[in-house]
Image (cartoon, rainbow, N blue to C red):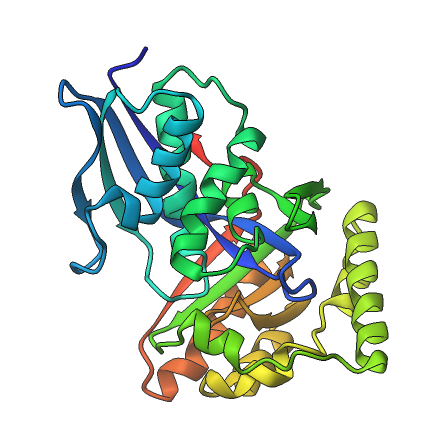
Length: 310
């Protein structure tokens, strides 16, 4: 058994524009770093948290990383072991980039690696989900699954955690801009209507199917024609200042599509190639900056690895 390990769990883009609560993709940055080490003191203990501005609890049962790790230890009948966790938050809170999911993934993954990896990554999914559920109040794997497994993930069933990895075209890049605007996930979910008109459902299903077909064929034109959201985006766009201006700036700069990352306020644009992603990101930032809204840009290919040991 190892004495100490350090892992990285990446940010993720929930919904991936076209698949609300059933699709997500992993980014190469930002993300969280978790350190797990053996201790002579029995039980699981969180000994350090950085980058959280004092927001996160040290009680493992009230902390997303801690609960995910604790749930795994209970499953493995290893609760008597002495393990310390350090949580280093390297991404903004409430950004729409799966911050709580990254912590949950990192907690479960770090302890699993420390114990010699008795479970596969996919087998860790239920334990990471328990941590994420603590933070979000929902049971949706569109952030946890890509953060853990990497790539673009389709959630066939959240209830059964039946997840499928989709092919990723080699030149598919994401430009993500995080404006410093507070949007609570519960608020963003609370404004959504509970019923979807049949016509909208049919249109959105076509976009989802087209996007998936484009991934399988590496057909960027088809991907671009399919990156549309006629159900969730119209209901949430009002929560992000200058949303449609930023979206239009991204499309004019060459993005395949642009919309909300997760519950927001981050906005994501998918692009063909890193050069286009860079110019798209700059165009998106310019709108926020001119409006006096501080913002941060993350450029990333789709992260194929997910959580990794450092």
